[in-house]
Length: 637
View 1 (cartoon, one colour):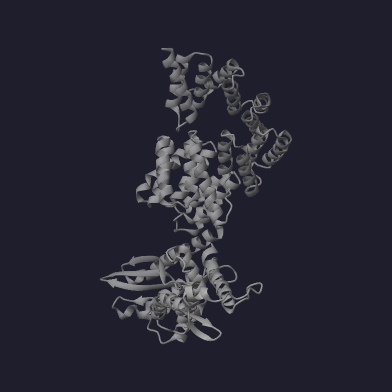
View 2 (spheres, rainbow, N blue to C red):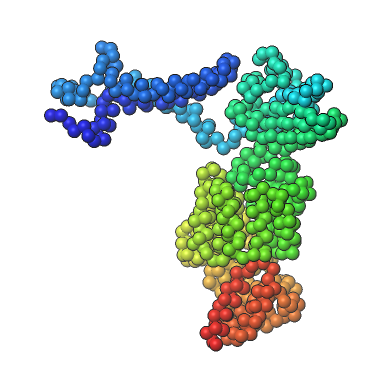
């Protein structure tokens, strides 16, 4: 009885019976392996590049032909025979089953091809370090400088064809990150390959030279002249892909300027290669997203600043490192932005705003990503959350793989209590790092994101984030603070006490941390855990340890008012502070909130309006208090 041939299962069965699938499984990896081999041997044998193209065309044409032949014919022990039709095959008496299926030669061939395919593909997909495979044993990046092409039409410049090459080799040799192939080696490689006209170097020939010199990064260039103006172009060439990934140009007005032009070119090339190597050594998507290329020295200072700001929580060190980066290169705008953030974290709003203003003044001369970053910083001081969110969303759209942009966008939502908007953005930031295969030493994402889950009552995910944060940054007391709060909220008092002991020990090892600061942290932990008696005890103790520090008295004042513990005492402490610091927005906020708690709505509204007018930046706490009091006044009237 004939089978129905109008369905997919019939077609799949026929492809399998006729061994078409087996042929395809051998053809595809075999074709890929062949192309990889051709790509390797073509330059080695000095074959023309169109050989690879021809191979691709032949393989593409051969694929459907091979599939058709596999459908029609079959290879048997008796030779090549036409494959029987399914109906004729079904009429034959079935062969008896003799146990397990025997291993065929084709099975071995397919397995070998798949192994070769994995070996060839793995480094292309999973190697995050693009320079690793072309580095010298000491980790430095090998670079070869080829003779420059004289396109000036003036034979007097022929000497500068090798002259620029020599000057760049000498200058780049001073770099600790670059291993420069010397003049004799480069020109020896040129002579070994064939007779070379220095004025007609091509990318294909450059690739052959790179193989001889065991490098992939080449510097090629040209010299041009118009009137008394001399222009020198230089390109960084990836000899493996024949891709020019960076181009530089310098100009001068006389032959006497050529030495200065060579020095300028050398600085630009050295900084680019060194920054690229540093970025790949750091192996994190944050640094890879930074487009800065001018000074490797400034870039190193910047990375030290990031480590101090995030991993070490040492704001003074961060300020010093970012300042040195700016002193080294005043055009490094990203360093301005992070310097402003460091001052903000240190509590110095005046300096933070100053550097935000300086960066914003330079925005018109910046690439789009850096311009948006400065506009976001500026809006955080002079605008509203809608503006900062809109700007940061543009940055995320511009570079979806930058976790820092995702984190900053989530923080903008978190600051205005839109935590359900923030959480998936933060999750995406962590996912990017997982995809990259790195851990992110950024404590802010762990404790802010954990606190967001805390507010939603998801303590399981909250605790996972703190555990991850402590694993990545073991000595970060901010993450320990929130981890203790989480333990108390889960009813794990013994665990919480252990975390508190570790928290206090960690803070004692911080050079700028005082006993009052540790007690303030303890008060914060107990407040967030809803343990107000313990919190009050620690807040009061800070005012005994450092009675002249207004911050501790303000913390106690706000705590007493906000949690309705003793509003009158809180307002009394607040008045003492306002005598010393009249018009301070945080103090006015406490006073207005306390008056509201006492039912004095009109007076509270007037004070809170003054606090809002005096604020240095957008303050969501004042905004919420103001909104609540305004509603109370409207209902009263």
